[in-house]
Amino acid sequence: MSTSEKHPELLKALEEIVGAAYLYIGDDRVAPFVTDWTRRFGGPCLAVVRPGSVDEISQVLRACAAAGVPVLPQGGNTGLVGGSVPAASGGQPPVIISLLRLTELGEVDELSGQVTVGAGATLGEVQRHAVRSGWRYGVDLAARDSATIGGTVATNAGGIHVIAHGMTRAQVVGIEAVLADGSVITHLSGMLKDNTGYDLAALLCGSEGTLGVITAVRVRLHRPLGRTTVSLIGVGSYSEALELMSRAGVASDSNAPGSRLLAAEVIDAPSMDLVCAVADLPWPLEQRWPIVVLLEVVDGGDGSGLPLDESADAVVAFDAADQLRLWAYRERQAEAYGTTGVVHKLDVSVPLPELAACADELVALINTLPDVETFGIFGHLADGNMHVEIVGPAADDLRVDLAVLECVARYGGSISAEHGVGRAKAADLHLCRSAAEIAAMRAIKGALDPQRLMNPGVLFV
Image 1: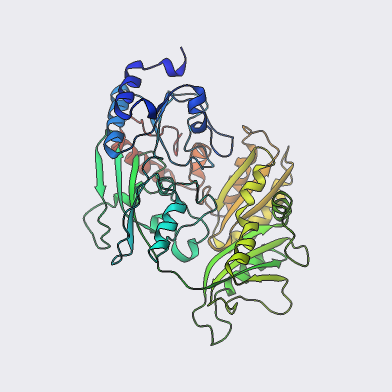
Image 2 (image 1 turned 90 degrees about the vertical axis):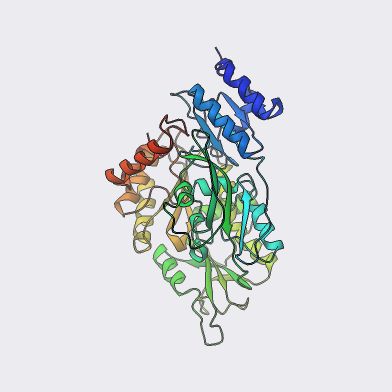
């Protein structure tokens, strides 16, 4: 019996809830929803449903709970750790709940600087909606036009402006979600002072679909910061990169008291070579450097906040077009590595004082691992977040993954900086979380999802 032939009564109920047009059954129709962006993770599902309202989602969850069938919430499916797609084997195939129809953009509240948006709205749509009202949303990342707000909240996404505004959790002031039993929780007032018990919005942020289905989010907005300067600067080591970053945003003289670091990114030479080849970009600096640092500083657009001296090998951009050109070297990294085949993408972070030593050890370590054809490191220097990209080992060969994660753990780091734990790292959670912490998280999961139907296999093995 094929997967789509199982649970005929449930499938009939789902069709009655969302309509035949929004119930996808069969390998061809569900194909875009069952494999993630990395092409390393994916598996079968019973069906894909695309509900158009909170009430429909509630009915879907109640029907699945009655049938004992697991559910998997999905946004833009841009994840890198298998958290938004079914498991390859083992367990019962889930019903995937796609949130892509929940795209409502509420009116910007000018008094509070907040807006309520549907979980299926993309990050880019929310950013542009805020800009039209004279505000900006504090989270930004390269997948802005495909990643959804619900997905970024479910994974507590970071991105390029964490140093200025914090992770996604810092932007969330209210949430609406449907729990495993179909009950709806709504707390979207956005009041900054509301000391009435547990912060369910913060709890659901980063829960990776294991506690409920996020349907709407109220987020804080920020006023535009002013004109910025973007630069690419060559340095000889990660230690030099960190020292350079520490001086960025500090006014070089009394005429620039408002300098502020907005972003600090790092790209190693192999990653720069690859993006130049794939995106047909020229090497931007006069010399070839082991490390290139990208800095964006709010300084009135005059470059006064950049920590540069006459000997620096750097290129500086003041206008928007040139800044986008420099950002392309960083933002097209994932695209560039994607052209090389299946990539082992390790999203990790370490305390800033340990970053240089950890990065140096990772480079030496990966050079000794079997089957590695090429690798590189890029990422968010300001918050200690490194994206380690490794090409060569088979998709299901986890030896290289474990070696990297164990190295990071030795430096007191995290095995997931911003993409979540998903299925890929569930077995390794103990490397950065104590047994007591994991037990507490399991207890929360059990309380809200006693049947263990919400995204099973994600976060916990």
